Image 1 (cartoon, rainbow, N blue to C red):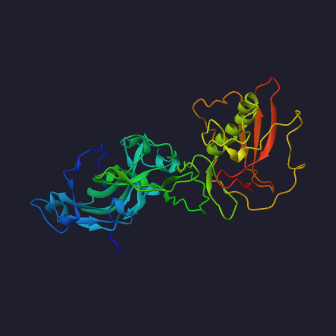
Image 2 (image 1 turned 30 degrees about the vertical axis):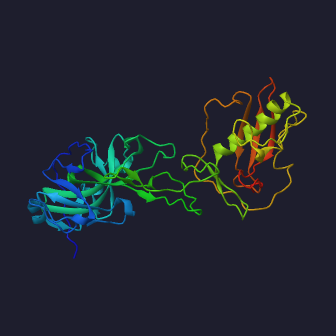
Image 3 (image 1 turned 180 degrees about the vertical axis):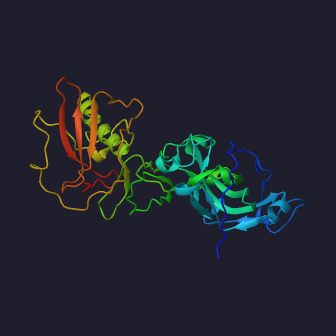
Length: 373
């Protein structure tokens, strides 16, 4: 039969992370990190060094010991505990994701609005121990908000992303606000989920100061920010995933080359052989503006195209680059045409005249140059 325990009603206390290999808790417990060679060994005043492997990837597994060991070992180990009261009560146990109160957020607020980075940390429960219902302690693995990382947030980390780590702490159960809904985003090709809740895909090794590997995409071989759009090539022999801003950059680079650079150098090879983004990309070498300002083609007057629709994840955001040569001269907007039989397209705008000229082109893969359908 499972043992249940109500959480302590002591007031929540603020805490901060330490950069030391030894993590010190406010409640008299400290954690020392060791190596695999230390496993099973016991130092004076500490618990026997144990391996914490949980179910995280390999780079967060670590050997640890707790001091004072006698005090920790003499407490009863429980499967779960209860936090909150009445309608706001929750049973929390091993493996659950939880919010840890940074300040004094009232119990129950978590059910109305998910805590933000300024309100809480996110952690995963590893162990529950207590000497009595008023003294309940939770051993946890902390997670990082991207902004808390040593070098700050990286370009590919989304607004709902967290990074689980092996930064271990022992905290009072009263500091836990409640459960957090966290999903594992694996970045598999069939992952087409809307990431509107907390998610993780990469871990941070607090001891070694290293990150786990995650997938790279596109011809640029960079990571994917789930707050932006990723478009899949429909060519069965290619199937690469492309960043929307890389597509826009290549399109505008080619337009600029054809309509500006080539017009200034009529004897220059129109196809070009440069791979420099500012000099053009042959993937869109056939782009040209219409001879008149006729209406943009629509689904009604475009021929039907067959094929698999591109996969796109999350909502798109406007992307900016630092002062490319075509800024103010040309712009491009990608249309996924979801919910219709039309393939994705790109609208190109020539802004060099008072009456801007616009036209529509098919979207082509940056790797195989096939039309994306």
